[in-house]
Length: 311
Image (cartoon, rainbow, N blue to C red; front, side, top):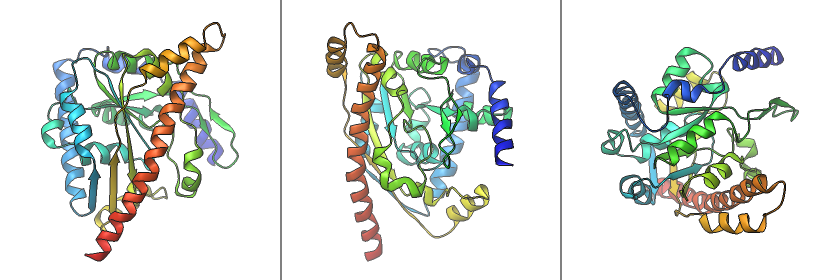
């Protein structure tokens, strides 16, 4: 049955046009009045619901102002890329609503765009409408069977139209959030999570945009509200309405990789694989920063839990 459902999913994906991002949004630089109202309504409604749900839980943000300052006050046309770990399907919703005040969410031009897996978020008209309303960009990713390791879908790689669309956004000075691990990392995989290689799409985005500011973010225990076990909806609602959970978000320090990009370009001159190696080198730098933040963030989460127990 599982194999049959995988086949149906791949058939559904094959019917989705690979330039879906451009078909939905037309271009990355201008929004119609309808699109702006559409995004504003959806983002505000989602944020209100999630902020209300989080009131029951122990939600702590470390270094929040670093992100808020970059969203509000970075120079015009300065791209911003935030990257984070991916532990559950609600990660983006919880991060966006949890970190940002409503005053920023109301400024729809400043709110992040985010890459979203086409095989989950854009498989039918209802899902497509919902995730497009939240500024989701459909991306075709390589997926594997977690049991056998066999490739289920090869994805479209770093040169797919959705990455082109994302580059247009960045070069217009927009904020893009992504989960460069490329999938949800399950609880039983967390001990070796720092060994997981990030996808090279982040490398291309850095290589071909105007020296973006990169900001790593690490969150802990979000999957306590959205566990990866069926029935997913029932379990999620019961967790959100159940025992208050300890949730911690740690915002890292911003950095830029223009210096590394120039260094790699010089050292790779003349190589036939120079473009791929440039993407790999830039991705590795982001990976190092993200997993370095992981160590600090998890220690802060343990402190947060200990503080709650002492109250």
